[in-house]
Length: 130
Image (cartoon, rainbow, N blue to C red; front, side, top):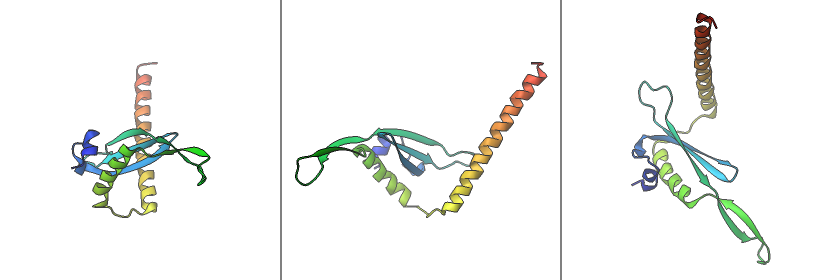
């Protein structure tokens, strides 16, 4: 079960929390997020890049003209099917406002921690007389 996910190195598909898919140039970028363990601040995630498949199709019903289209890779389609099976079984409709606020809080904590780290580095430099 979940052979496509396992082929990507995801040995515990039950740990998958959610995923995102976006297109970047001629690639699809799949990011898979895992459930956080207690005490973990950030959810672990992995990212995969799939080139879009190029196809030539008839431009109209006359069959005289052709055009090139780019579509999702069949391998990625199989992976998404498996992710949907996992994610849909406990999917809760996420309120967009709550998601945005959660993202802002997360960003705020990341920035706060980075500022503290930089200030600490500056303090070390000051103590060393540099």
